[in-house]
Length: 444
Image (cartoon, rainbow, N blue to C red; front, side):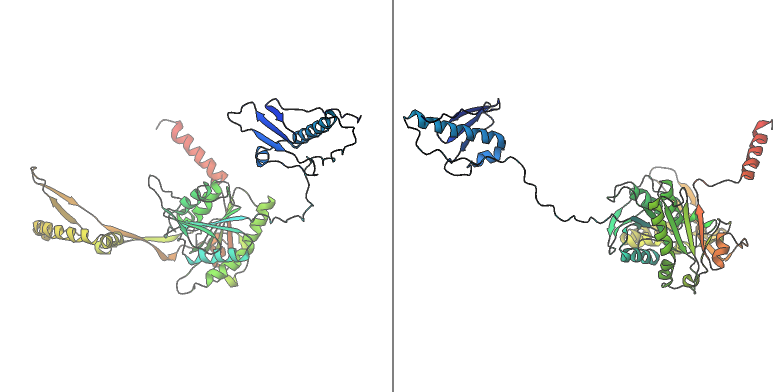
């Protein structure tokens, strides 16, 4: 007799019920209501195992399939002995064991992942189409070293100071600037930076550097309090982001549009050095750098660290007539039909008050009469005047060579560190303390 083969031990998961024929095993889950039965068929005359598609879909463990295959082989061998054979029949060919190991592909050449570019966020005070901003963005994009992003006002906000838009909805529109991700905002430079750093517009969480500029006109001395370009950089500083504000000393009849490209060439080394040292962690913290470029950028005398001066332009309020009031003209041009109706009402009302205006000695006074139905006759006088603020060409002098305005006038690129909050001289602190003590400490 041929030697009998011991039946191999088979581990069957508790969730399966098995039945078999000569070359097929039926695997039925106990929870047959939700899982379909499986049918495994093995060709014992070949060296490869055959399974139905349902096996693949249900992902049976290879070790379980190998055990099931061994059971079928042993049962076929036992069936030959029981049929009275003398053991001289052909033994079933050995089956190729199932290899449940995972083939590891040959190691491929490592793919070099380029490092992330430093993120630069740009704003300004004069609007997204201003030549200074355009020249700066073009230079940063052309170098290919930075991820350039722009969030700037859609109109001129150069003297908006550190103002924000509250209780009003601002409009944000995508803008086409080659090589950069750009948005124009109906708000102020501070709105632009605050919105950009909020995470609502850009995919990054924090830029490497914020640059505000290049502004057409200086922001020295007291102008920093009014300047929108300085406010944009200051807002970045408030949020813990290093920043630069850049302005060109633009002078009428002397400066040209090409000076902005020269100004960019002057400040690019400073921008590159700032980004490099920010990444190294050695850039000056807790301050923003205000950069003032002289009128002739290409002939500057070099960089000079300066202090904020007390320089300011002389202001002048000019009275203008009602027909020169710009906001009224813009409104009437947009609402022509309404303007015609208002003009007709104005003519009707003017007849009633013509005599009184004729005898009046006052100037720039408009008299408006209104009679409400069913109410006594009332008379109201409304005085409306229009003024426009202008900066005079005559400027107050500042003779200290280490102050921003004087260094700029002498041909240097003035770099002024700005801190938030402003530092107070110790002597001024003492004087204020003494005054408060005397003013509030005794009887007045």
